[in-house]
Image (tube, rainbow, N blue to C red; front, side):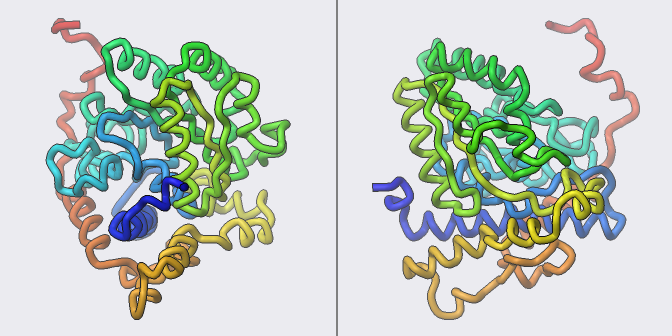
Length: 358
């Protein structure tokens, strides 16, 4: 039996809800920037939400994650199934994440960056870096230490398919494989590494084929189907937690916009319009909706409520999302906008040693 077949109706509806949350976070930030209420670069996860939701949903609170720039919702969605307002939940609050985006005093990064270069040891989130795959060796060290202390945690690292061409990717996987460390590398294969197509990044038909060289488990998931992502990641998690070593889970998806919003216009030129249309045809919200209808979990008016799928951020409205999703993001955004920026005296914080304990 597939892991997803053991999910309850409530679990499945919660997964659907989380897809809306991840999509609305993206839509709302794009709108806020167009309104002039937000500055800085945005890295959209539009059309890739199933990768995040499906991979995160089955983790235990003690498990670690290592998100990248395309995974901003992961910072507040970690442990989401254990209650959004649960004070013991090991995920960041929506207020913290929005303050990070707006560069305010209550952000984890204290306004030193507006995007994903944040983390939390207490919440078991490894700080992301600009060089993708650079956190895989960090993840290996984290779970190695956990095992030495008698723990049973796994760590999910997120990487684009372009990062698999880097030396650090291979060195880290080799180390994790030799020591059978429970590192699960999620490869978000959205077909483009900035402006480089996947066929010019990887010589094998599937990125997951790289696992064979290290004697690792390599799995391929339909990145538009949240339940298939869940199944493949849960298979890898069970494999790793049992002491069988690391795994690669390649999630085949498609990037809706440019590498960042600074690349949107250019991306419309280096990617053929037919490719963009085909890549976005299977919206993860629509795929999940149909699955829930087939299962009998969405019936009557609920089947056609809140049609957010298939719409660009500029076309989507608040009416396309459940009210509680809009309310949740409103809370974080308004908190961030009203929060102050850090004092100028903080400029040297975390830059120079202040004479305190090392």
